Image: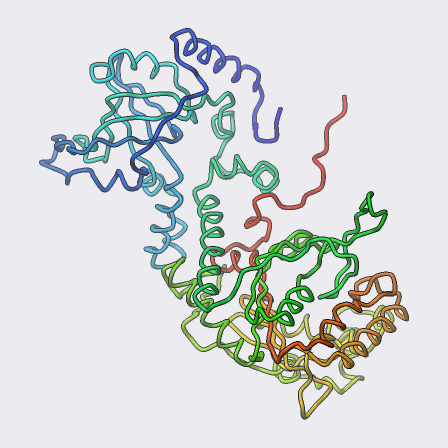
Length: 539
């Protein structure tokens, strides 16, 4: 039995459907479909239904003929000559999003799973023997979740329900296994394990999940439009690197047989993108897949998607303005509102984003001074941290910062002026070389973006790389962003040829989708998240 089947007797369910498939084939039809061209989505077709007439009387039917395709949500027998069914297509996700936008508060959104709301995301089919003729025999062989195409006119029944009065029907794909809730399940809810491992069942069953992934696609399209409108060039850089760089993370390693050399799946595209600025592209962005060989959590997946962009002649201060503009653009053009609901938190993207320095945030939210080693160490111990587990005080202090400050960063907040040791690719503050010209954007307790005023001094960059290498070797730290004792000399050579004054930023698209869809787990916004192999029972 597959993970999507929730009861016993799946062979029996399949046998019954197989008999109907054979009956369809025997009638001269292909049970697995044919070409069909829909003219409308279900959501668009619903708007063509004439207004309700006199109570207790059916409304007139539309003059326009519609061609609809989708899955059958249910089938109801009304005597020997009539069937009712409900048809759903991808536009059910748009209907869900419209209903969610219209919701006034969280309580109203909970009601979106009520039957009345779900009904409005599909359309009722009126399948009558007299109108269908020979096609009515096909109706009797249909099952829940079969794919069909129908041709008909829109109207309303005597009860006022929007309905397509079908004049012809074809099968577009026989469903050989019933949806989970039909196969003996007590509820239409799928477990997280099934939803993430068998995403096709999740998308089939959940309008909210389908809406999440349509939202993801539209957010990425909105990002592209935003940067294209600002004269950025979209580029592609290598996903396999011979030398690791651009971030501090443990890599995935693969081997190239023809060259007989190890390669690293990229942890960030930063160094290649800045090479392009050296070459004169001036404004570049890449929507890229990155890989980090680290743990799983509600906010971390080993394979993830980012948008990184670099702009000549600007700095991190201007990038903060650009970041606010980007998020408002996406809210306006994709979500339709600058008000977000993420769990219990309401987030207003219209309000100015707060800007606060790293040390000031530690002081405000933890009551600690970064320079007070004794107090920070005592706080670390109270949080269950062992100072012996950290190679340096700075690393310990940063862990304390993350544990004490990040839980408070709910409204959009730029954390600026991070310690220099954290960011070897970043310019320092002129008045304080121990702090950088950098920011991290936090919303809903998540780090969403990270930006620098980029370091473009080749000699200082070489020095920073060697310092990072020495620290990693001393600490036996395989997350320092340096592999096999090497630094990226070609990148330093590129800087020798002149990187213009510039700023760059990376933003996690998976977390952005979490924010815009109210999802609390990254696995709910990645179609096929990384999971342990499914355990197969023995015996």
